View (cartoon, rainbow, N blue to C red):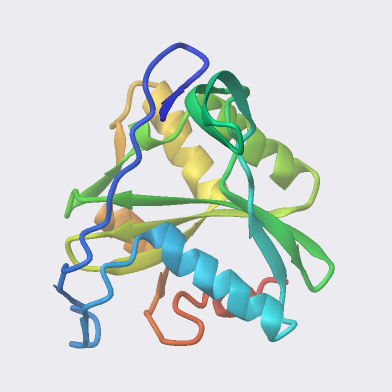
Length: 201
Protein backbone atom coordinates (compact mmCIF):
# COMPACT_ATOMS: atom_id res chain seq x y z
CA UNK A 1 0.00 0.00 0.00
CA UNK A 2 1.26 3.50 -0.86
CA UNK A 3 0.80 6.09 1.90
CA UNK A 4 1.72 9.71 1.38
CA UNK A 5 2.09 12.84 3.50
CA UNK A 6 -0.02 15.93 2.68
CA UNK A 7 2.94 17.37 0.71
CA UNK A 8 2.95 14.29 -1.55
CA UNK A 9 6.09 12.66 -0.14
CA UNK A 10 6.02 8.92 0.41
CA UNK A 11 5.77 7.49 3.92
CA UNK A 12 8.20 4.69 4.73
CA UNK A 13 7.79 2.72 7.95
CA UNK A 14 11.02 1.62 9.58
CA UNK A 15 11.44 -2.05 10.29
CA UNK A 16 12.89 -3.32 13.55
CA UNK A 17 15.54 -6.04 13.37
CA UNK A 18 14.05 -9.04 15.23
CA UNK A 19 17.53 -10.51 15.82
CA UNK A 20 19.07 -7.36 17.22
CA UNK A 21 21.09 -7.89 20.39
CA UNK A 22 22.05 -4.83 22.40
CA UNK A 23 23.86 -4.28 25.66
CA UNK A 24 22.48 -1.90 28.26
CA UNK A 25 25.58 0.01 29.41
CA UNK A 26 23.78 1.31 32.49
CA UNK A 27 23.27 -2.04 34.18
CA UNK A 28 25.18 -4.55 32.03
CA UNK A 29 22.05 -6.52 31.09
CA UNK A 30 21.34 -7.83 27.61
CA UNK A 31 18.19 -7.57 25.54
CA UNK A 32 17.26 -9.79 22.62
CA UNK A 33 13.84 -8.29 22.07
CA UNK A 34 14.53 -6.15 18.99
CA UNK A 35 11.56 -4.02 20.00
CA UNK A 36 11.07 -0.53 18.67
CA UNK A 37 10.50 2.32 21.10
CA UNK A 38 6.87 2.48 19.98
CA UNK A 39 6.33 -1.23 20.72
CA UNK A 40 7.95 -0.90 24.14
CA UNK A 41 5.78 2.11 25.00
CA UNK A 42 2.62 0.40 23.78
CA UNK A 43 3.38 -2.55 26.07
CA UNK A 44 4.10 -0.14 28.94
CA UNK A 45 0.84 1.74 28.41
CA UNK A 46 -1.12 -1.51 28.30
CA UNK A 47 0.44 -2.45 31.64
CA UNK A 48 -0.50 0.96 33.11
CA UNK A 49 -4.12 0.50 31.98
CA UNK A 50 -4.36 -3.06 33.28
CA UNK A 51 -2.91 -2.03 36.65
CA UNK A 52 -5.16 1.07 36.73
CA UNK A 53 -2.12 3.33 37.03
CA UNK A 54 -2.83 5.60 34.06
CA UNK A 55 -4.78 5.69 30.80
CA UNK A 56 -2.40 6.54 27.96
CA UNK A 57 -2.98 5.75 24.28
CA UNK A 58 -1.11 6.24 21.03
CA UNK A 59 -2.92 8.78 18.90
CA UNK A 60 -4.29 7.40 15.63
CA UNK A 61 -3.23 9.20 12.47
CA UNK A 62 -6.18 10.13 10.21
CA UNK A 63 -5.74 8.69 6.71
CA UNK A 64 -7.63 9.58 3.54
CA UNK A 65 -8.04 6.64 1.18
CA UNK A 66 -7.83 7.60 -2.51
CA UNK A 67 -7.52 4.26 -4.32
CA UNK A 68 -9.08 0.90 -3.48
CA UNK A 69 -9.01 -2.30 -5.53
CA UNK A 70 -11.59 -5.05 -5.20
CA UNK A 71 -9.89 -8.27 -6.40
CA UNK A 72 -12.64 -10.30 -4.77
CA UNK A 73 -16.22 -9.42 -3.98
CA UNK A 74 -15.62 -10.00 -0.26
CA UNK A 75 -12.25 -8.24 -0.02
CA UNK A 76 -10.93 -4.73 -0.57
CA UNK A 77 -7.27 -3.75 -0.93
CA UNK A 78 -6.16 -0.18 -0.22
CA UNK A 79 -3.64 0.84 -2.92
CA UNK A 80 -3.05 4.50 -2.10
CA UNK A 81 -3.75 6.75 0.89
CA UNK A 82 -2.65 10.10 2.35
CA UNK A 83 -2.20 11.38 5.87
CA UNK A 84 -5.03 13.92 6.15
CA UNK A 85 -3.47 16.11 8.84
CA UNK A 86 -0.01 16.80 10.17
CA UNK A 87 0.37 14.83 13.40
CA UNK A 88 0.94 16.55 16.74
CA UNK A 89 2.52 14.17 19.27
CA UNK A 90 2.47 10.40 19.61
CA UNK A 91 0.72 9.76 22.93
CA UNK A 92 -1.79 11.34 25.29
CA UNK A 93 -3.93 10.43 28.26
CA UNK A 94 -4.49 11.05 31.94
CA UNK A 95 -2.61 10.25 35.16
CA UNK A 96 -3.83 11.28 38.63
CA UNK A 97 -6.20 13.80 37.10
CA UNK A 98 -3.49 15.41 34.99
CA UNK A 99 -3.42 15.49 31.19
CA UNK A 100 -0.29 13.86 29.74
CA UNK A 101 0.99 14.45 26.22
CA UNK A 102 4.31 13.25 24.82
CA UNK A 103 6.35 12.41 21.76
CA UNK A 104 8.65 9.38 21.37
CA UNK A 105 11.81 9.47 19.25
CA UNK A 106 14.78 7.22 18.54
CA UNK A 107 18.21 8.19 17.23
CA UNK A 108 21.21 6.20 16.07
CA UNK A 109 23.46 9.18 16.77
CA UNK A 110 25.53 8.22 19.86
CA UNK A 111 26.46 11.75 20.96
CA UNK A 112 23.44 13.98 20.26
CA UNK A 113 19.78 14.12 19.32
CA UNK A 114 19.05 16.00 16.05
CA UNK A 115 16.27 18.54 16.39
CA UNK A 116 15.25 17.91 12.77
CA UNK A 117 13.32 14.95 14.20
CA UNK A 118 10.72 17.48 15.35
CA UNK A 119 8.49 19.81 13.34
CA UNK A 120 7.31 23.29 14.20
CA UNK A 121 3.68 22.21 14.58
CA UNK A 122 4.74 19.64 17.19
CA UNK A 123 6.72 22.27 19.11
CA UNK A 124 3.74 24.64 18.99
CA UNK A 125 1.44 21.87 20.24
CA UNK A 126 3.73 21.09 23.19
CA UNK A 127 3.88 24.76 24.13
CA UNK A 128 0.08 24.96 24.07
CA UNK A 129 -0.20 21.89 26.31
CA UNK A 130 2.20 23.43 28.83
CA UNK A 131 0.33 26.74 28.75
CA UNK A 132 -2.85 24.90 29.76
CA UNK A 133 -1.21 23.11 32.68
CA UNK A 134 -0.71 19.74 31.02
CA UNK A 135 2.29 17.49 31.50
CA UNK A 136 4.33 17.37 28.29
CA UNK A 137 7.64 15.72 27.51
CA UNK A 138 9.59 13.67 24.99
CA UNK A 139 10.96 10.16 25.45
CA UNK A 140 14.25 9.67 23.61
CA UNK A 141 16.03 6.39 22.96
CA UNK A 142 19.70 6.26 21.97
CA UNK A 143 19.60 3.01 20.03
CA UNK A 144 23.38 2.45 20.07
CA UNK A 145 23.30 2.09 23.87
CA UNK A 146 19.63 1.14 24.27
CA UNK A 147 19.33 4.03 26.75
CA UNK A 148 16.02 5.83 27.26
CA UNK A 149 15.54 9.33 28.70
CA UNK A 150 12.56 11.51 29.55
CA UNK A 151 13.14 15.18 28.72
CA UNK A 152 10.59 17.78 29.81
CA UNK A 153 9.03 19.84 27.05
CA UNK A 154 10.24 23.10 28.61
CA UNK A 155 13.85 22.00 28.06
CA UNK A 156 13.06 20.86 24.52
CA UNK A 157 11.47 24.24 23.75
CA UNK A 158 14.58 26.00 25.04
CA UNK A 159 16.84 23.94 22.79
CA UNK A 160 14.48 24.55 19.86
CA UNK A 161 14.64 28.32 20.47
CA UNK A 162 18.44 28.07 20.62
CA UNK A 163 18.42 26.48 17.16
CA UNK A 164 15.98 29.07 15.77
CA UNK A 165 18.29 31.82 17.04
CA UNK A 166 21.27 30.39 15.16
CA UNK A 167 22.57 27.88 17.72
CA UNK A 168 23.32 24.19 17.32
CA UNK A 169 20.79 22.01 15.54
CA UNK A 170 20.87 19.20 18.07
CA UNK A 171 20.76 18.48 21.79
CA UNK A 172 23.94 16.89 23.09
CA UNK A 173 23.66 13.62 24.99
CA UNK A 174 25.32 15.37 27.93
CA UNK A 175 22.55 17.99 27.96
CA UNK A 176 19.90 15.27 27.92
CA UNK A 177 21.65 13.44 30.75
CA UNK A 178 21.85 16.68 32.75
CA UNK A 179 18.31 17.99 32.25
CA UNK A 180 16.46 14.76 31.48
CA UNK A 181 15.75 11.62 33.47
CA UNK A 182 17.27 8.24 32.66
CA UNK A 183 14.64 5.46 32.57
CA UNK A 184 16.11 2.00 33.23
CA UNK A 185 14.58 -0.70 31.06
CA UNK A 186 12.50 -3.25 32.94
CA UNK A 187 10.14 -6.14 32.28
CA UNK A 188 6.75 -4.94 33.54
CA UNK A 189 6.51 -2.15 32.71
CA UNK A 190 9.20 -2.04 30.04
CA UNK A 191 9.74 1.76 30.13
CA UNK A 192 8.41 3.03 33.46
CA UNK A 193 8.12 6.73 32.65
CA UNK A 194 5.27 7.20 35.15
CA UNK A 195 7.75 6.56 37.96
CA UNK A 196 9.71 9.60 36.74
CA UNK A 197 6.54 11.72 36.82
CA UNK A 198 5.41 10.68 40.32
CA UNK A 199 7.41 13.42 42.05
CA UNK A 200 6.04 16.13 39.77
CA UNK A 201 2.29 15.33 39.68
